[in-house]
Length: 341
Ligand SMILES: [Zn+2]
Image (tube, rainbow, N blue to C red):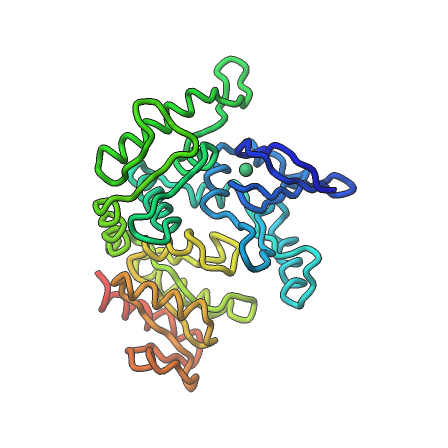
């Protein structure tokens, strides 16, 4: 049964569907997108970072049918439903697991990172340069990472915060962005009109450009490859090669459970010092990630099993051709030491 409800995350009017035994509720929120809260995952609603996580990563109804949704179902269950979905059974759609670790991992760690996320979001939302982005107050709070709830000092319970406090903080953030010259907005001096209009300035766009081009001095290396049981030995060989060279290997399926290109994946590529791609399985995702990394000026190290035909464009690049997984760690370590740093 579909009913109108208040979204438990952002407070918008939302359509919600409760299943017959009420172990989970499926929401279609205009701000948080499609998501499901199961009975066992209800604790996640206490996570104050959930609202921004859903807003930035939402699965929305678009022109084409959307089967993806965030859910507190276990990873295993999501895998099972995803396999059914890939075989053409759409009963459970395409669930994407979420939990506190995933949210924590995605959440910006510093003030500067928040600013970056906000500007990137605005540039994505404005289809054209110079186009105004119009947001209602629920969207604005999620965009600006304003906590809607907090632990009360006396009761130790999570309580909703008063709207004027949230508004004040939203103003503070917008004032900062406007003062730095990144945006223009019709919100000023503690007055936030609803909806609020925000316009990215040329200075805002130039921060976005340099953000996307910055070569990270971090110690992470993102690995793009085909994931699955059959590639486990390959994955471990690559991990060892990267670790022996003194870097952390980031495998995207270990930090998120999702086959689609998401802001989180792009962020991992941006934050990586270099990218390692294994092209043995001609995986489209790996080609895309390599292309994106190259566009950012990141060094890319290619691997491929010998005798596999490579796509023409990248076939000419110097590639580590391997015969057996055991050969990979040492050769990869040497290549990293020779070409990165
Ligand atoms: Zn919502």
